[in-house]
Length: 140
Image: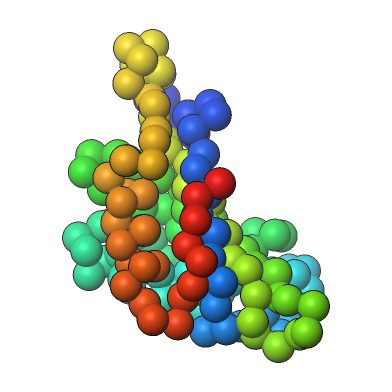
């Protein structure tokens, strides 16, 4: 979209631990062997749609997966990636990277700030903290 970019310094990350998502099987269609997150992105997309968030289909990057979201008038880039624990298997740490999109006007008007209280951040935290097999949800 012309005039709409990622807001500078407007990324917030949520980290958590779980064994729910694939961190052990490298799929043939992965760009790189570390491109885990396909199943997390698909699950997160379904959960966000249930909460009234407009979300695109997951796409792959060379570091993981991402979706684009629109909520409460704001646009967001939501990337996901994970790292397995040293013991291997699917237990590991996941990162959800949220970047707010803003127009030139929003940046000039000082309305491009994103905080932990941002509408989408609140929804994401609620989704993660209500799942019994997701632990140690925290911001970075």
